[in-house]
Amino acid sequence: MDKIFISAASLVTEGDVRGARLGKRLGRLDLASQLALLAVDSLGVDFDSQPRDRIGICLAARTGSLATDFDFWRGRDIVGGPSPTLFAYTLPSTAIGEIAIRHRLTGPNLCLVGEDLILSEARDLIRRGEVEACLCISCHVVTPAIAEMVQTAPTARAGAVFLERGGDGLRELRENDRDIETLCGVSCARFVAS
Image (cartoon, rainbow, N blue to C red; front, top):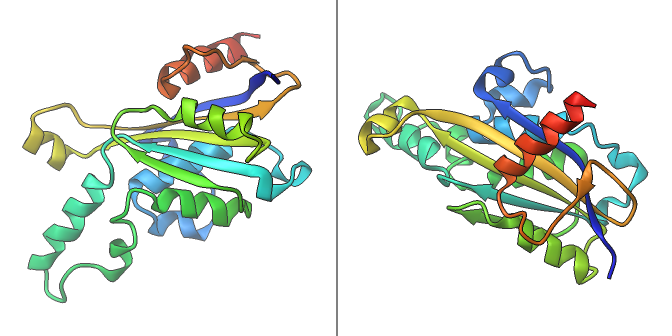
């Protein structure tokens, strides 16, 4: 069985989005899509050197599209009603589409809402031969308004890893690697230190 390697890892926060230069589309995206797209771009992966139809995308939307849903719902009280532009982002999987469009990736994709369990799904996609590589993104957005409602701390961050069959990279993916955020933290720290 071929080994699967983490060839790139990144972590981004809302502060990183403010200074990002990702083109005209970035400004119209919801925060979750902005974070996911920036996390993928921060990987520095050269997609031109790989078959784009053999790269999968797996996204863990920890809070779904709750922050965007809330903003859209709040718009019902505004003259003219909710923003039709914002409506497109009331699906947790919208970030996958934005990533696929930007990088012209046409491989399979998967969006899970809730806990970050996508590494095992990505591993299975690669092992079954459905893809040669997989982008894995974990996005967690809790706006101040949502944080107040559910009595938790606000947060806005995303982590991404790029998994590939064989070769080498930052390190081999292990069977007990399950959480992208922790994996990115460890991999990014090692990458920066070396």
